[in-house]
Image (cartoon, rainbow, N blue to C red; front, side):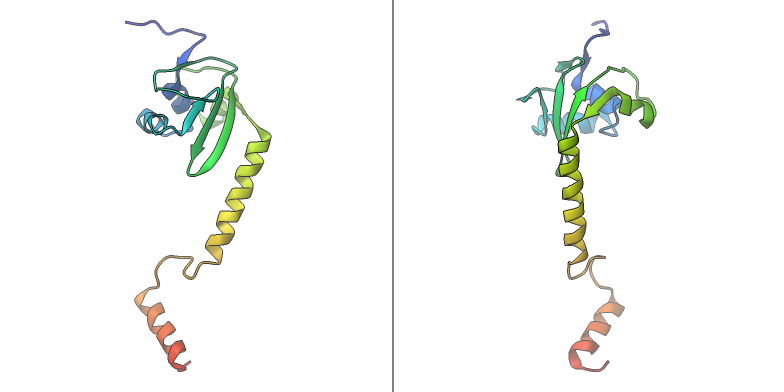
Length: 132
C-alpha cells in the first residue's frame, strides 16, 4: 500500500478537498471528460499534483484557473478550503462577466421562469384574442 506523501496528492482528491466538487466521483468524471488541465496538459485522475501547479477547469461552462498553494488530505470547511489555492484574477473577471451575460439572456427569454402554467396560457390566449 502506498504511503501518503506530504508534498504530492492525487488530483481528484485535491479537487474534492478544495471543494470544487461535491464528491470525488464527480471530480473523476470531469477529469475523464478533459475539463481539467494541469499545467496545460490533459491528465488522469491519479495524477499527483504539488504546490505551484496550475489547474484549469471548466465548471458549468465557466472557466477557472487556479494555482495550488497547499495540499490537504481532508475535506475541510469552505473558508479553509479557499486557502489551498489562489485564483487568477483575469479568469475570475471573465467568469463574472459570463455570469452577468447569462443572467441577462435568461431575463430576456420568452418564459424566464419556465413553461407557462395552464392559467398563464389562458391569459396569453385572452390577450391574443383581444379579450383583456
